[in-house]
Length: 124
Image (cartoon, rainbow, N blue to C red; front, top):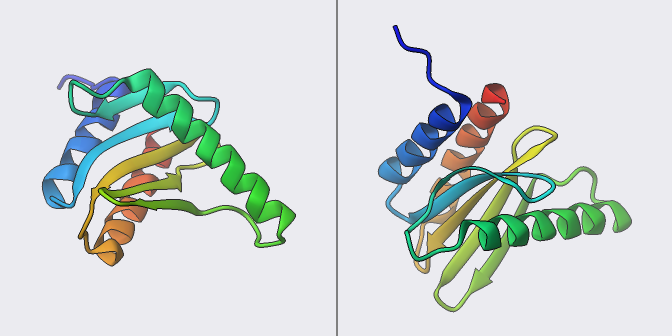
C-alpha cells in the first residue's frame, strides 16, 4: 500500500470538501504565517495571494477576538457582493480557507468545514 504525502492527503481532503458541497468554489490549507500547504483553487487564482490574505485575515481575527474579549478565534467570515470567504482555524498552525458562492447555505458550509478543519488538524 502506498503512503500518501501530507500534501496529497490535504489536497484530497479539499477536493472531497468541494465535491460534497457545491457551494464551495475553491479551498486551501494555509499555515498561520502565510504559506500554502495544499489547495484546490482555480488556475487563474494566485496561490501566494490567497495564502497571504488568509494569514492576514486570521491574524486580524485573532487579535480582534482577543482584544474584544471574545475568547479564542474559531472562524472568520467575510461577505461580499459575489460570495464569501470563510476561514476556520485548523489546529494551532493552519487555517482552512474556502471561497463560497453568493447564495450558499452557510450552515452547511460551516458544518462541513468544521469537520474538514478537524481532519486537517489531525493530518498535520
